[in-house]
Every structure is written in structure tokens, then in C-alpha cells.
Length: 110
Image (cartoon, rainbow, N blue to C red; front, side, top):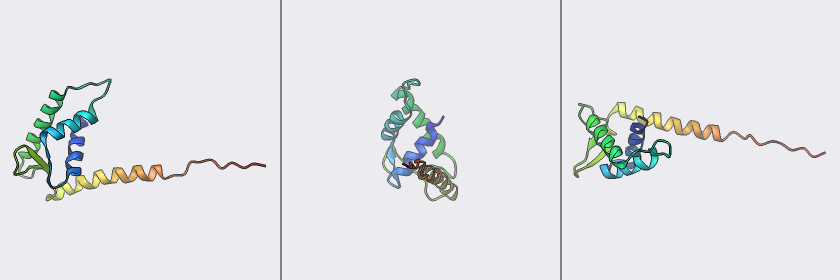
């Protein structure tokens, strides 16, 4: 599911403070829901909970629990996670380079 990448992207943008499960679920609902593939808010919330539970269990977790109940943040301390940050940044830079190409036509009036 492409929503997993969206969850990581939201947590990276949130920074060290992290976000609550409810806010992550609402953002995911707004960004991944479409007219042709409607998904309920309850389904989206359940997916976020499963994703966070799955990714906080390993010894080197991608996502960490914060001290406040129900708040999660991206684990910026791991080297493997820094590679994920670079992958997200590279995609944004490629899009900027593609858009910066001047495709306008030169009009010569004679």
C-alpha cells in the first residue's frame, strides 16, 4: 500500500515532536482517499495503528513512541533511517529539476 510511504513522509515532516495517531490517520485519510477508491476513516485508522505497531517492535525501529501517550515520531538516530530521508529528498529534487526546463517556444515575427 502506498499509504505506508505517506505515513513515513508525514512523520518526517513532523520532526522530533512527532504526531498523534489521530492526526496521522486524518492526514492519511485526506491524502490517500479518492473518488474511485474510497476508504473509510476507521479503516485508515486501523491501518495506521497496524503500521505503527509493526514498525516500533524491532530492535532498530523506524518509528519510535514518544513519552506522551499515542504520539509517534520518525527515528532520526538510525543510519538506515537517514537513508530513507535521502530517498525522500532525492525524489523532490528530481521533480524540481524536471520542472525547471524551459519548454517555451520562441516566436519570430518577420
